[in-house]
Image (tube, rainbow, N blue to C red; front, side, top):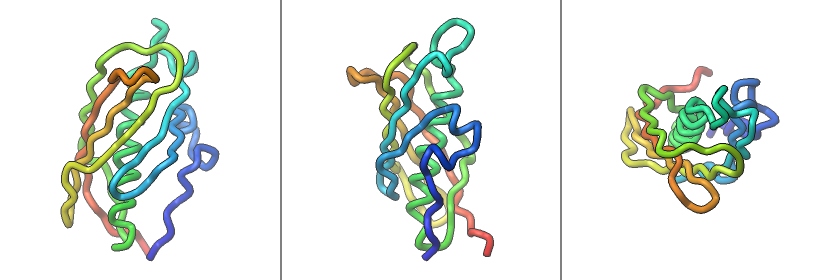
Length: 136
């Protein structure tokens, strides 16, 4: 079996560091994490940029889908990401949770919710992914 990559924020590239998703659970059945949103995530109008939500959704779903096929020496890449922005958020913790809707031999569909500390939904997305072999 291939080892999973380092998912820590400290090992991430600049783009993912900027988005700020810290994962605490990363399995083929569920991914859980959070973002400590602040002014660094804002649009010029003072609210968290939708790209932060789309990145969190894509990242969490890709991590989970890849974990699900790691034992087959595969990983998953996103084919489509549909993220809805439900309500504006300015500052504070955003909880991220993703889970599979469908896991097939060649493809997967995952859903992800982004909620604020009071449990209200801020964004929700679905990512369709393709399982691809790792290069040796």
